[in-house]
Image (cartoon, rainbow, N blue to C red):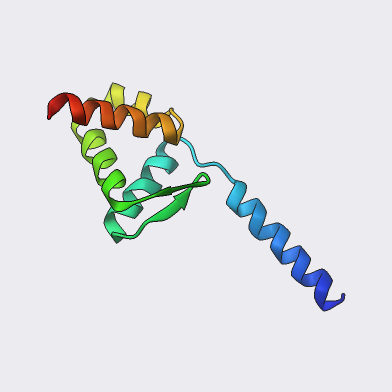
Length: 91
């Protein structure tokens, strides 16, 4: 196998990993990881910063189990929108 073919194969595999979409509890765990590590990360193709992650985790931890399941089933942009609406409503 040529070196260029190997590089191309590695690029394709890394791209597949990047395209993997997190959902449900995995998505919340990834957001919690950003919060715990205090380091922005790319999740489902979007950069999630510490400020946004901390807001999502604060809302997630304060809602009921039923609503946690509902929130976890949403896409990342939808979770962010709902989080900011709830935070602005309380402020």
